Amino acid sequence: MHPNNKSSKIRYAGSYFISLTSMVLVLLVLGMYAVTVVFADSMLDYVKENIGFEVVMKNNAKEADINKLKNEISKKDYVKSVEYISKEDATNRMKEDLGEDFLQWLGDVENPLLPSLDVRFIADYANSDSMAMVERWIGKKSIVKEVVYQKSLTNAINDNVAKVKIVLFALSLILLLIAISLISHTIRLSVYSKRFSVRTMQLVGATRFFIMKPFVKTFMLQGLYAAIITLTIMTLILFGAVDYLPEMDLARTNIDIAMIYVTMVIFSLVLTALATMFSMRRYLNADIDELYM
Image (cartoon, rainbow, N blue to C red; front, side, top):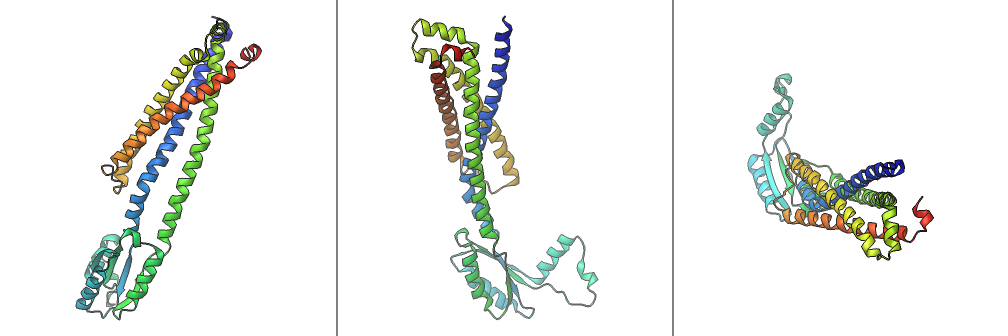
């Protein structure tokens, strides 16, 4: 075997592997972007509905009055749940958090913890404007000492999720351009390694489609391999994420996930086919001297 042919085949194999890896990265980022969009709303709702706020009662508030306020709040359309936390419940929770009985360090001082209501909102109302309005209403109650909540947390979550989407989309576009460039380079090496066969087919009058066909098949197969590898990685990531994010309901979104998977396979095949045909047309239009470079 001629040294140049052997060298070109080695370069082609290395370039093929690099372009395959690049395709996997592109599909993985695009796939995770799509999954993020699918789960973003449900995850945001889960987070919003677990923010809520704490209505701290005055020390002299009677339990009957607290329960009355609890029932009043529970009837509101925007409230998901209300939990009454008595002074004893708050004390027990504090003991569990600290791992010891903190009351023994207070001596004769009265237990400083106060009874409270833990209020959770329906996701659509869990925003700073709605919560501020409810805060003003509840804060006017005579038995309420204060209303405690993280005012900017919900807006911060919305902003951060939007930023993550933008970053993933921008990254996917960059990787897509890199992948197309690498595929083009790999095709160039492939054409170069088979330049005599390509030139012979041109001389005997073979059509461009006939010449392109084996190259298109080869790189579409590469696209299929990339899609299979990507979907395997994504499946492992999704099932692993469920253990840490129980709010990700795969059963509820299985149709959306299946559509993403099918779309990724089709996208991978179409991308490699178009990139191959575009690059092949350019190289077939090249002068013989350029083809031999």
